[in-house]
Amino acid sequence: MALAPLACILFMLLYAIAASQDPEYTFLENYLSDLGVGPGAWAFNSALVISGAMLSLFAVFGLSAALPAGSVSRAGGALLALAGVFLVNVGIFTEDAGDTHLVLSYAFFITVFASFGVLTLAMHRDRRLGPVPLYVTGGLFLSGLVIILLFGADPFTETLAVLMVMGWGVVVPGAILMESGG
Image 1 (cartoon, rainbow, N blue to C red):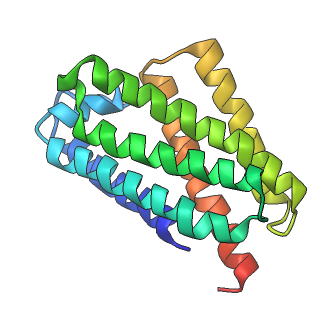
Image 2: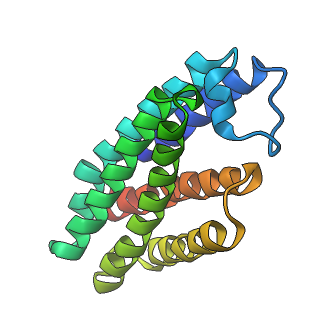
């Protein structure tokens, strides 16, 4: 299912548009969400809403079909779908919403990396996707923990975490497509 890779491409395109329209934005020095209240806010917030919706759809329809039946797989998919819902809301409740935006942003990152932890267990139990998705998902789970717990939230770690999630959004769906033969 190509939803997740398309979400990554769309996010990058709309992010680039938003960043190009905001002369105050500096890569790795500003939080990504700063773009959500700047001149290109329409592009950045659209990227979050659309990508979050696509992530949720992928979790429900693409990922669930590729993983073994069971509670661990369902929990991992549900957490990933919830992360998508949080991402949609980050795009709706911008930095202008104050603490609501902050809580939703943290909820997205915590939930997406928690889903990686649970999905690692599901992929470990059923290896039909092969070793790459298992190792990528597990590695990103551990890396996410290190970033969130040890380094906290700053523009660099936020950007790194987003890039990690986007990398996952290409590798794992690619493995699913290869496994399904299409």
